[in-house]
Image (cartoon, rainbow, N blue to C red):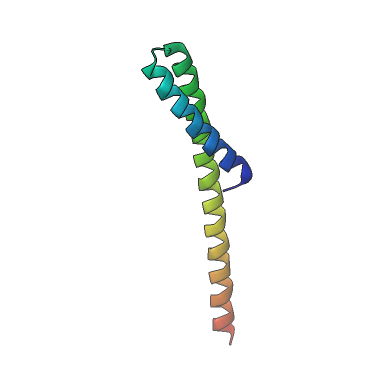
Length: 74
């Protein structure tokens, strides 16, 4: 996960906690805004994590392909 993904994760979690606390305190408009922005931040973190995982998987596939080609060439 990149730095942006980590920031998004922690900010998103913090905003979700704020949304829950505001909901308990009957501050519904603040809870809605915090919940929406927290959800967006968490989605950004998830997309970043998936993107990085797919990139690492592609590198592993390339390395395995090169290794198979080297073994067949010997």
